[in-house]
Image 1 (cartoon, rainbow, N blue to C red):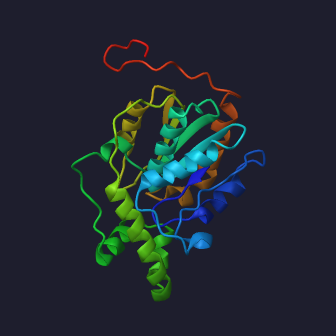
Image 2 (image 1 turned 90 degrees about the vertical axis):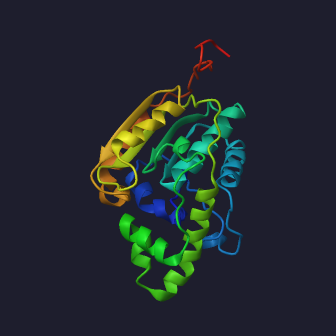
Length: 245
């Protein structure tokens, strides 16, 4: 299950899906307020997106993994937390978070993203990617900017809540020249899981997925093939004493 970036839609993952082997069935979350869900109210909280996806995945059978890019990394992480809390973690075989600092960094005092149109345009110019190209068309920009603004408002409102660490294997992907998160900061995701952890750096910036698609697809294919048919989750332990809980 793939989670798009701020302003993104399910179609963002079309090219990645074509690069993965046929035995990998790619599904992408379509956030409300875009593409075929255009008329629906946009989500004001990332938690509501995670609630909806976790509920849907709870009705599915068979193993799956979660992949989230940028804002989607936070939604994927929160979805994984809900799945594990509900006892469905054995079917969740892996979590892949891309191009985003650890969710725990978004806690209490932090710099919020300005929602003014000039600042959103400046941010898109900094990050590049598909959204920046849209801005050159006034009609497309008129449609796209409200979606982006709503997503950043939801991201600004997100508050990470301390709790049980994940037990699902966690893989972090980051672009070598990403202006928002470097490899060292991305390693902070390690503190949010008791499961296996690894981090991979690819050439490119925040949207390295478009610049390094073949090697990203090879990594995902290899990692998904390595995941066991059913994960034996480690027992939860008290973070202070190390004793089982």
